[in-house]
Image 1: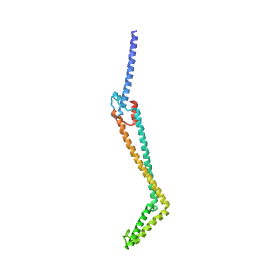
Image 2 (image 1 turned 30 degrees about the horizontal axis):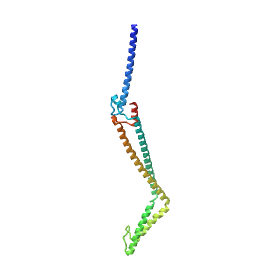
Image 3 (image 1 turned 60 degrees about the horizontal axis):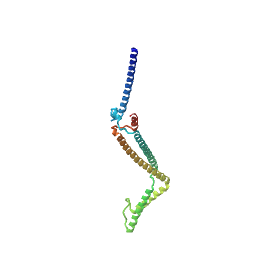
Image 4 (image 1 turned 180 degrees about the vertical axis):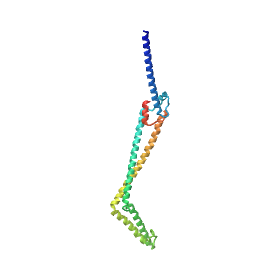
Length: 231
């Protein structure tokens, strides 16, 4: 009977020892896991109880930060796409404009207006000289009697080309409109990019400030959400 009691006590002691070894192994594994998690965060205390007491932000707060970051990233991507499309459009317009210019100087209404204004001003000089019975000041190094016909010819030549080269003028005007739109889109995209970058900078400041009470330098929102799940 004494032997059986001794054997029973020995078996119980052995079982307890095995349970203790299992418990100690589990505790060591858990401690290592905690240490690894804490090691992922710069500034986090190495003492698990101290880490447990950290004022970690709520998971809902972190998800709000993630949603805002996604929104800003989407806005920035749209602005970059708009900028690139505008840049491509400007290159295409420049290429087509060079092809048109290879066919000769493109007449414009602005050039016609300027030529007519020069013609009219020269005519006023002619009238003034005739009234005063003087030769008058030369124009472009030519006496008034020769200069005025030149200004008339220049204005008429532009007017003729506007009629003859109507298709060329129309193409040039269309390219000018496309260039103006592309330049406007590029400027708008630059403004949107600057705004998105400024808002992202402010977001980063708020993100770091959210973790400041913990004394932790945070990683990305996804990393901090994963860390919080194991915290």
